[in-house]
Length: 431
Ligand SMILES: *Cc1c(COP(=O)(O)O)cnc(C)c1O
Image 1 (cartoon, rainbow, N blue to C red):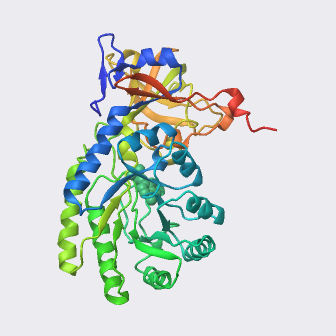
Image 2 (cartoon, rainbow, N blue to C red; image 1 turned 45 degrees about the vertical axis):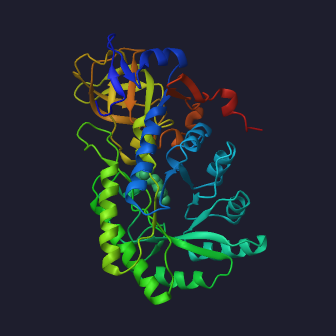
């Protein structure tokens, strides 16, 4: 099994976090998002412990909200004393609604509007990760009107290419995010920031991409960032306090993906930081990182009911389910791989090559192509594994399909964290 929270019970049913998935599907209906609460906590604790062990005092991991944003995840994060980043006022609002502390929160985005900036300041968001000169001027102006000094990090692009899908690669010079180091623009921007009276520059941020398995891109990014930090210190007399290396650690979606030891990765990054900082003659800044996927992905699973099974002689076998791109658009967007299992008969030999099709009127609404499962029959339960990140958070109401609920599986039992949308909810804003 790709994760230790998955198993098969004596009935041949797939289990998740020790629960019978077929029973959960009967109890809550399908499609259904499941989340393993203990797995989320386990990942958070691993990151926090590794940061404490390997990085300078004051270093912190934060959960990247965009991977999964709902009230219950913020309650869990709050209990675990894990910080967050946000990319929108909607995420700020959600976190705030459960009294999540925002004084160590990082606010991202390549186009924060004036009202976003005001909203974040009024809600006490600790740090803005400024993304452009226009934005810096706007932050300075609005902070001045409010009579405050806003702490920021400057997002820069170190100029490296990661071996990941182009749409989730963000560290290269040609990117809508950040300001390029290699063109000299990042340094000019720092000079500009240091003259802005209502902005306090606290350090630098980079995020090189997502679903990265190797340490090497992080090592390269760290080296480039530290070289930049040393140059800024030497030429402009500015000493960087926080270096935020973003998110991006990969997650095992398929059996053939490598197992990632996040503690070991963090240890490797810390070694590079030590070597590079002593070589450059600078102090090691406080380190921040923003794991999203690697905190919640394998804590999630989605269950569907099977509808029609259509065998097109000489072509493909389409197995249709009662969800699809509305609850998981990631195959449509990036051809993301997933492991698919027939939850109702998890021990039956996998002798049927299936293309899993969603229910939307859209040929591209496919969840996975040519995967091996036992030949299913109508109303059996299909499970797509590792769906905890970027599934619920990317879900839509296309075709007026209501979004599935999130059911959390914890020590005290299973409980609803997000309710199933109703048709009334879908029409709620129609006038
Ligand atoms: C997407 C994103 C993250 C999280 O990335 P993961 O791959 O989910 O860990 C962190 N920081 C920023 C700025 C991002 O855009």
